[in-house]
Amino acid sequence: MSIRMGPVPDVWLHNNPSWVPGEAAIAWEKIPAPDTGPSRHEKVGHYAPIVDDLIDSIENDHEPFTSVQGNRDAMSMIQAVFEAAVTRERVRFPLQERIHPLRRWT
View 1: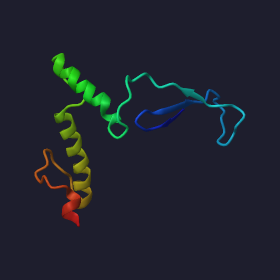
View 2: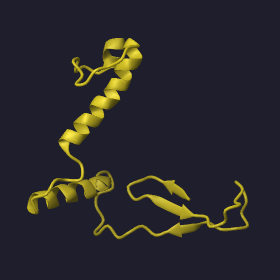
View 3: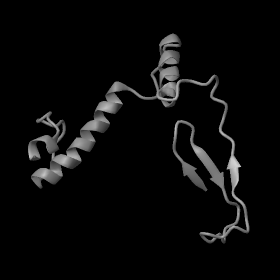
View 4: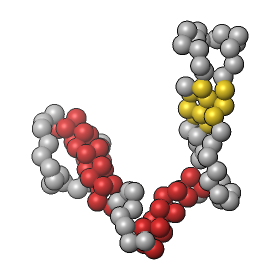
């Protein structure tokens, strides 16, 4: 399987388990993308599923797929990796220093 990311992922499948790179004898099969509805502006179209889910969560009173808290926690974990690399020490949560570690390192 080959997945090339973009606003709409380009997915290809090769059904031969003994495939060798550069071999052209067996063709790759393109997996069609699901219909995502009307076309959106290409610069922001890849955000459409996130925005649609947010609107649906407001209209139907449920939590969105991605939340501010989840995103904040993910960013804290990423910053903790940099913090540990810069300080060469273990890092405790929640992070006490809110400035990105690489800004302090330069």
